[in-house]
Every structure is written in structure tokens, then in C-alpha cells.
Image 1 (cartoon, rainbow, N blue to C red):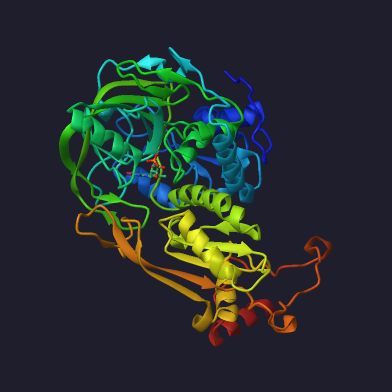
Image 2: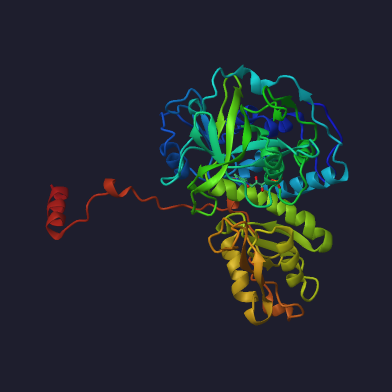
Length: 501
Ligand SMILES: Cc1cc2nc3c(=O)[nH]c(=O)nc-3n(C[C@H](O)[C@H](O)[C@H](O)COP(=O)(O)O)c2cc1C
């Protein structure tokens, strides 16, 4: 393990310890524990609705380890990505740098895809135990929202080989447990996995896969990077600065992540479709129940003491998608428009549909150019807001302030009707074949109008001070229950006479 390769240009090479916690969920949990970023839920929770309900109440704070999950021997981790500050700590950099580190890894991979080869081992930690039965009900797979159609693996990487080239590719797919050894799952339009299944279905053959749960942040984030060819898993090697180890599948000729907590080996059955859904999606709405693709489980292997990884639809997926989208946008837009300073996909846009882009305002119409380039760089986007460098792009109030005081709908609005949209968003009108849909996209150029008198748009500033230099006293009120009831005239009189005696 730990072969050191070439470094990623534009980003510091992670230390061995940083790299380990980005690939190995166990090392990541140890780090979270040591840095005070982990809550441990000691009370037993039911994986049916209760685990997710507790996680929802803790959303956005520290990561949560559910130590006792009813009906299973193994704990569950939730919230790995719902706090960007913690993700930054895991990467060993400020949260704002994470998308740039991902973009730098993509650039390094594109320059030399084979620079950091991973090893393919016979065995690894992920197959310390080979389960004697293919029984998914032993795993602590949670049932999240009240109308979900079943328990979902929602955080596992599917590795499949391109049937034409043999190269492995990774992607995340939600997978609903329908029987002890059967899953039905979703393939969105345009996915590589869909292409592979089509090829195998034409041959009348099953497509073998490995389902990797608990893989660590680097491969996890890389798996959902948009618009890269297949075999993009090697981007993760650049992100951690060294080759990542894989193992051979026990029953399928597909690699699995050596450091995974659980590996489920399966095959996608040709021509078979069974009901999947509903599922609480990233949009905050339920995705509907329909007949979708089916996998049959062939083997389950695991660590001796594994931790199951789940994500809660909401902040963690908004961040996860946000990071990859920000990386893709910085990577693509900065090449054409070097004035780009930063990009943020706010939570209100579900990490998918809205981008706030900060640029240096150097020429007329730069805002409109940025809007078009950003929409091209990340196709699910529906709304782009461009702001100046004096606006905090992560603060919704500040962005709203820029729109209110710098945006003129007569000149600064870009409307692009009939654009291809992301089918999970309920405002996207589905095409007749149901494979895609269209929506009107919008850009708001909230930059100070180019050439406007500077004093008109000069932002109010106050002197910089350090509050630590001031003695500031707070009048601490007692909690209401401890306070004496307000004195009525009679009580006041009685009190007075007591005090007098
Ligand atoms: C938490 C999460 C869940 C996802 N679920 C699905 C899914 O159910 N179906 C799907 O097609 N894509 C899903 N995706 C998106 C794909 O994994 C992602 O777009 C990936 O990059 C596709 O790989 P490809 O471009 O090689 O086809 C999900 C992404 C995340 C982060």
C-alpha cells in the first residue's frame, strides 16, 4: 500500500495520513473522532425510519455514528459530507479549496490518465470475511423517508467494466432491496452504466458489477464527477496523490475497492425490470415508483468489523454534487474566462440547479459570458447568478443584496427556453420518451454595471477591529422558570411588610 506517485499539479500532495483517511472510511472515522467531529449515538435505533429521523435532526453538524442498529451487528455512519468545514478538514485544506483540489486532480488525470496506476490485489481488507449467505437483510440498510418504497443502498459505488474496452468505471446509483439477494435500481439517461447494460442486453448477457460501500471520500466524490469519460475512477488516485488498491471480485471479473467496508458482488439481469421507488430524492420530493433495472447478488464480503455508510437526501448530497459541479465549472469556465474567482452551488438550489459565480468585473458583458459558459459546464443547472468580488457568494443574504441593488432585468437577464434539464427536478417537462426533459434556464448578471460611476456602487465599509480587544459584558437574565413571578400590588405589599419585619 501507499506507493507514492507523481504529484497533482496545482495542489499539494496529501500526506500519507491524509490520503489514507480519504480512501479508508475506518481511518476517516478515527480522524473525525480525534478532531471532535463525530457524534456517537449509543441508543439502539431502528433502521426503519428512526435512524434517518435522528440523522435529519442532526443534519449539517458533526458526522454521526449510529453504534447500535436494530437487527444488525454493524454500525452506520451518516453525515460524512453534510458539513463542508469537516470535509475540508478531512482533505487537510480550507473548505473553499476542495473544489479546486478536485479540479486539479481532473486536470492531472486528463494530462496523463495512467500516471498513478492502482494495484489489483487477490485479497484486501474488504474481503476479510466472506459471508456464507447472500443475505442483504443482515446489513443495516436504512429505510429513510416515510413514503420510501424500501431500504436503499444510497451511498455505494457501482464498479462495472465497459463491455467494449474492459475498462472499469464507477458511479453511484440508488438501489432498493427487494429480496434478500435482489435489488432494483435507477440508471438516469446518459449514464455509462446504461450504455454498458444496453450492450449486454443486446448480447442477452448479464453485466457483472461490484457494489462498494464505505469507500472513503476521494473515490466517493470522484464517482459523481460529471462529463468525464468512463474510467474516471483514476481521478481519485490523483486526488490522493497515489494509486488506490483494488481487489479481484470473488465471483465476478470486476474489481472492488480493497479498503471498502462491504462489497456486494452482483449481476445486472438482462431484460429484467422490477418496481423501484418511491425514494426521497435530493430535490426534497419523492422520485416515483416505476419498473427499473434489477441486480441479483452473488456474494457479500466485508471487513471483520465493518461500518455501513449511508447518506441522507439533503445537505450531504447538495454538498457532494456541489463540490463536483464547482470543480467542473472552475475547470471548464476558468480556461475561457480567467476572471473567474470562485463558484458556489447553494443548498437552496439542491446542489444541482443554482450556481453563484464570482468574477472580476473587467469588461462589458463578462457576466453574460460567464452565465452561458457556466450553464454549458454543468448541464443540470437551471439558474446562474454572477456577482462581484465584494459579495460573499456563500451568503444568501449578500447574494440577494447584489441582485437587489445591481441587477436590472431589462438588461441583465438571460433566458434560455427549451433547454435540456435534469429529470429529477419536478419543473422539468418530461419528453415523450420519458428519457429526458426540457426547462427554461435563467442567468442573472448581478455585477455592477460596467462603466458605472464607482462612487454610486461603493459598498459601505467600517473600520476593521478585533472584538477580543474589548471588554463587553452581557446582562445574563436568569432562565424564566427561576425568575420570581412579577409582583402584584398585594404581593408587593406582603413582600414589603416581610422585608420590614
Ligand atoms: C448520492 C448520489 C446518488 C446518485 N444516484 C444516482 C442514481 O440512482 N442513478 C443515476 O443514474 N445516477 C445517480 N447519481 C449520479 C451518478 O452517480 C453520477 O452522475 C456519475 O458521475 C455517473 O457516472 P458516469 O458519468 O460515468 O455515467 C447519484 C449521485 C450521487 C452523489
